[in-house]
Amino acid sequence: MSSSLTAPFLLTGFPGLEAAHHWISIPFFAVYISVLLGNGTLLYLIKDDHSLHEPMYYFLAMLAGTDLMVTLTTMPTVMGVLWMNHREMSHGACFLQAYFIHSLSIVESGVLLAMAYDRFIAIRTPLRYNSILTNSRVMKVGLGVLLRGFLSLVPPIVPLYWFPYCRSHVLSHAFCLHQDVMKLACADITFNRVYPVILVALTFFLDALIILFSYILILKTVMGIASREERTKALNTCVSHISCVLVFYITVIGLTFIHRFGKHAPHVVHITMSYVYFLFPPFMNPVIYSIKTKQIQRSIIYLLSVHRRP
Image (cartoon, rainbow, N blue to C red):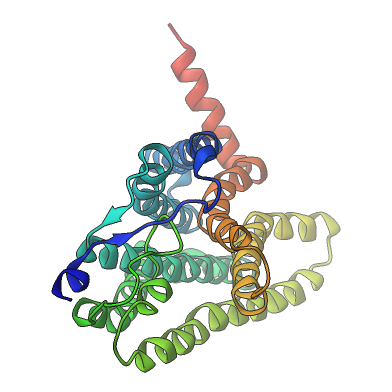
């Protein structure tokens, strides 16, 4: 019994497709490398280019940093399972991974909310933008977003350390998730079932509502601008952020629907949707900002031209 309590958890890749894991690993590795390069480049450009030292780009750097951390948290175990069939994971490492994965999801939602606040101030009160969003205020907002994400996940993760695990030790993904681990516990998990529902309502759901409300007010302001050219210019500054918000929340809603209503869907669909949730936003965010933001484009062109010189 005691060995069953301390036995490591077993991660799962794609059940039934184990023979194809090496092939499946190729697109995964390509996406992981793209995410690291894309977000790493964004961070480098924002640090290096003084014209990008503005609140909007500081928040973008926070988004890129969060995406990098999510990727670095999941990548080792996913590639370990797909490449070497390395499935065993100790309890401590598993709980720590789950803590970072869920915390960073809440941080990402918070950063998108902070970016909406930035666009709201820029369009509603452009003359007071620099006096409202000072560097110290941007730092405070960033710190608040980080603290909210990392502190709010302590209550459901800590009990995992003292729960006994006497059932199966097989997890349904190639990384640890709180909802996966808690189902394996032989203990009263009522708190661990209820708390995340309340947390999701007070973070993801509330953030989405505030973002929606801020854009209604932004649209109202933009519609009041007399010049059509100015209206288009104002809206263009929001396109990248709106795109990132849609990418993030559509994957959140998709994952929620699959878990809630996809009971009869093949298990591979559930697993694939989880990977889409963790990989699609970090992959798309640098692409969106590179395509839609002229300052970022200029920085990329400058960076390439400097490196081309003999």
